[in-house]
Image (cartoon, rainbow, N blue to C red; front, top):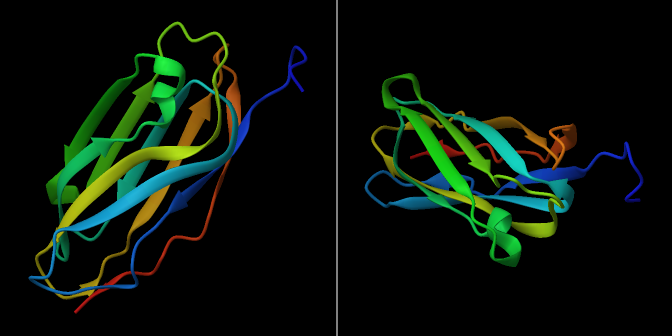
Length: 145
């Protein structure tokens, strides 16, 4: 570990209850990373059924601010398309972040009944811009009732 040419890694974990109730929200869905090493930036794409859910907020987690580093948190919502793009970057980062922590917390309101079709994809890179191997844990199959 730590040798030149090594790349980081991590697993993305999405936590959500299996059922949201109409009128019962807002519901917070945390997106975390576990087993991370050498992470300097993360880009995530969250997709969902816009007839069932409406995203009302995307809050930055603390993971990429580890060690007091400044991080840039950008979000690009597409409510009509049921998509949110998030980028979290540590500028001029020389070491990357390791461990486990919260990347972002998404807040949803329910607007209809049905399958939420929640999905998260993305990529990450290390201090030298090299791609980091990300695995994605199973995403809960959320139903709005």
